[in-house]
Length: 251
Picture (cartoon, helix red, strand yellow):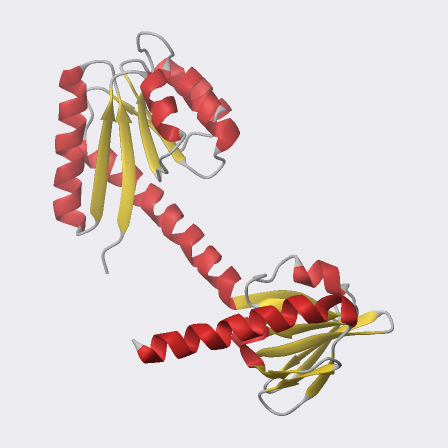
């Protein structure tokens, strides 16, 4: 399976820019991955572009006119903890500075393709791992149940209720009691999908069949109380969803 990676190459010498991009294209052909390459001759230009662009990997020349690669990396690292930084340098003694900005590695010019391939292999594996973690975080809710970490499939959650000093997570096939508060759990849920209907209840909006002034009816005809505080917004949102579905059917 091929993956897509956005890579910025920043070097004030056009020769090395082109050499590195040619090696990256060779890696693209060999790996089957899609590499979207952007080229910069100054650290200042990369920083300006970084305000609107997102990159997975940066390959920076260490010594450049204006901002050095280390200075450019330090500025970027303040805003982006996850981007992978690789330095290209003619001198190996820059390794210590590379570690200060949490760089993955450094390449010595002229860049050796075998070394580049190894470094990119580590970089892309790290990116893929982070993607899997983000995907898993969207799919599962992690809670501690009796000192064990339990991953609950979010799509199966019907509603969550506060009961004394615990939160009870009701799913389509189980119930889970944890000592986190509703607000702590809510912070980790998609606010477009989950909704407070009462001080003591959070409901999966996708499972609501009907909204009344005092209760909501869920897909399994379970009734959950609704407080006056949340009723108006909940009703408006529910009716908006119905209208959207009707409009889609009419198209």
